[in-house]
Length: 140
Image (cartoon, rainbow, N blue to C red):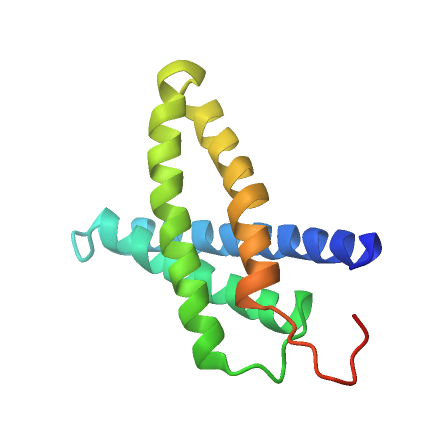
């Protein structure tokens, strides 16, 4: 694979992650301000709904904009994406907890996010979830 393609995919995935995280934050804040304050919704449920919205946006941006996988079956890539995301969330929680003991809460969170994106989220998105299957007519 050419370096330019990696750069395009990595930068696109970073943009998709930023948009998804921003969307997650906006939904969470809106729910907290409107429903949690009046005890119509818990903070945890608001966070879960925000994460779900962010995840759907990230999946959609990666599938259709970053990796352009229009022909791939949605069910298989979505199941792989959910698995990758759940494992990333668990890993982020564990790594942040461990790092916060000596790097602090904020820096531990940031380092964990970066490490997981570099070594887990981007590679799995690129090579597993949204992998381009070559046909016999494709060049290696």
